[in-house]
Amino acid sequence: MTILEHKPETAQKSDTAIFSHLESEVRSYSRGWPTVFEKASGSWLRSEDGKDYLDFFAGAGALNYGHNNPVLKSALVDYIMGDGITHGLDMHTVAKRKLLETFESHVLAPRGLDYKVQFPGPTGTNAVEAALKLARKVTGRESIINFTNAFHGMTLGALSVTGNSMKRAGAGIPLVHATPMPFDNYFNGVTEDFQWFSRVLDDAGSGLNRPAAVIVETVQGEGGVNVARPEWLRALADLCRERDILLIVDDVQMGCGRTGPFFSFEIAGITPDIVTLSKSIGGYGMPLALTLFKRELDVWGPGEHNGTFRGNNPAFVTATAALEHYWADDKLQRDTLRKGERIRQTFMNLSDMFDGVSTRGRGLVQGLVFENPDDAQKVCSLAFGEGLLAETSGPSDEVVKLLPPLTITDDELEFGLNILAEATAKVRS
Ligand code: PMP
Image 1: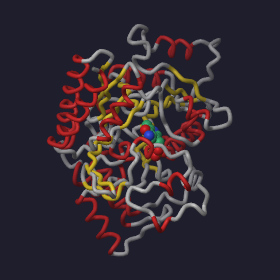
Image 2: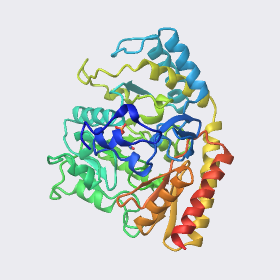
Image 3: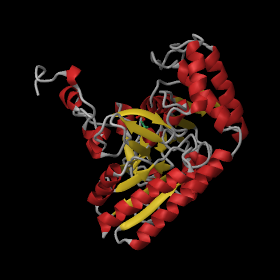
Image 4: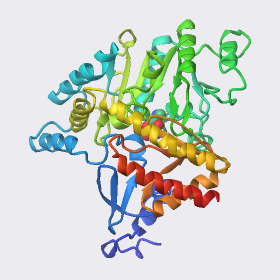
């Protein structure tokens, strides 16, 4: 279509012409969900032609508290209507003070964590870049250990520690100073996981430069819902401590309660040196990211890492409201584990019933794994037809990954699981 052929003023409902005409081919989610969304509330989105979709993806984990959550919305609306600061660079503001106080009282103090908080820029990849830069500055070393099937973001530093070959190729230059090691269960439990890692660290002939840091996800979301066992995480933390290597946990997708506890590493009882948070920390789907690090690692000079959009004050307000409302007690955590167990039961039944189907997950990130990646795609597209948004993940997109809002009701969960069960039965029988 040429520019003359496209007449925006005549756009009809469900008209997607402007997207294919003007928006880059890089768009992706819109291909699996070919409709035009207009409104959203809780666990539901509505397209402009009036069809409702249950959201089992929750903004890739950015909407743990659902769409347009009323508690967060009213805090946001009050703030905007009261002419609160919107754009604040890294100036002191009332909204930022409240967020820091609440983060300390509701998240850090109850867990005995003495972290400093950096606002690295609005996205997850910003938080990862800051973490890598800081680890290199603190240690004076260059290389980073990452893991097979890791995902840490799209900017060059974060991409260098990301596994996916298609995404890496997008860099267009060599991605250097990162060495991948096998994630937990990479060899299906056949080989002792740390044999290779500890051996090359200690072998002066291994060719591995002494790393500044190890960066790890406790559950690899994009990489296919690969779950690290608590004992594996503990062994990794021990290895890092013994060898004076910093441990970075990237909690961008699995933090903010996705796996149950606020931080996904709590299950292992470890204290990472550096932690990245984004996605649901803003609460309302508002861009916000934090890089947390042990107090003694705060070697930044003023302005050494900066960014125009580090002071998204409306996001500070919704983040504060989310922490106050959902993290004053352990109700959300308990509900998350209960609902996760409900999904796991359904997925276990499906894997018992059908060959070539298995399951793995933790809390409200659960994967239905298909031996044949085409089947996972088919299940998601059948589900879309029935009004359910679910996405695939994994190196071959072989995993149907469930990330519903943590606030989803039991009935909604049941409704979506029925759709997925029927879609799986259709595809596998
Ligand atoms: N780290 C992890 C673990 C992620 O899952 C993601 C996003 N999927 C990122 C970093 C990058 O976050 P963003 O897309 O906000 O840059």
